[in-house]
Length: 335
Image 1 (spheres, rainbow, N blue to C red):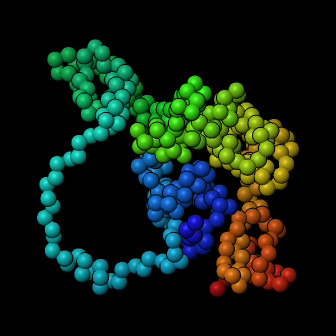
Image 2: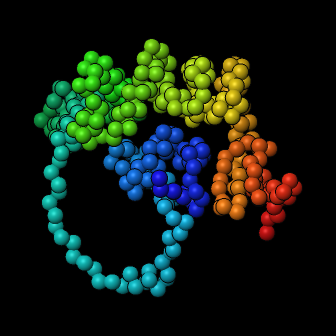
Image 3: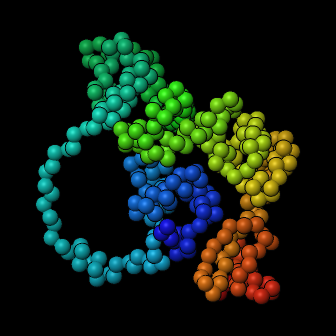
């Protein structure tokens, strides 16, 4: 397997959590994107949506297959580049829309029509989703305000639609697998829809894990605990606390990390309020640090807790500016 480097340091699976927090991407998306870089050279950006795609793109810009860094252009090169003659831009017809783009586009316009409540003909909505006043039958001013409010609400629907579609995809595929058995294959779906096999498999896995008991939380909450390497009993405890105290997906991820590090979920069970949960998470964050381990074989990085110093010829605690050399602790001075 190809060795990847993140910001000049060999990338390991244990680094995924810190990368997830840094770029605000779920752990499984980090793992998936890294795997794609190893096999394809870059993430398959087309399978990601909106903000996630841009965050993955930003993360990938820090990952390389070598320790060599891109050198900035010399000023002379930049100046020469500005002096290059302009090249005429060839007029090219836009590529025809795919069947998938047509379906998604039509669904979006139908949703806009339903939310805008324009059945009385006072507004005209074009095929590309634009909406204008019908001059032959203009709306009452009160109705106009209501339509604008409804359209504004459309902007808030994306997370909910994505959440529901994740559960729907997982349940549909799981049901078809159960009904058709070996005749039905996820790989065939991916081939037809140009979707990533892992994405579909993940949705199915999360659905099956919580088929009998789902919490009043988002799909992302369930996905976080499903892929956390902690006991099932701890996963249920974390989701129960998240449901009771309105904890975010990021909070849930932190609680999973706490259980994994402490190898005990009693602390999570003792949570009795949101403030208590946040205090525990903040205390855990304060106890976290990053160690750089220097050995004759090379340099590596490890995320750990303060005081839990890994072995190495020289170990540097980045957060506390301390170096551990042959059993001695040395403060690193700032120059």
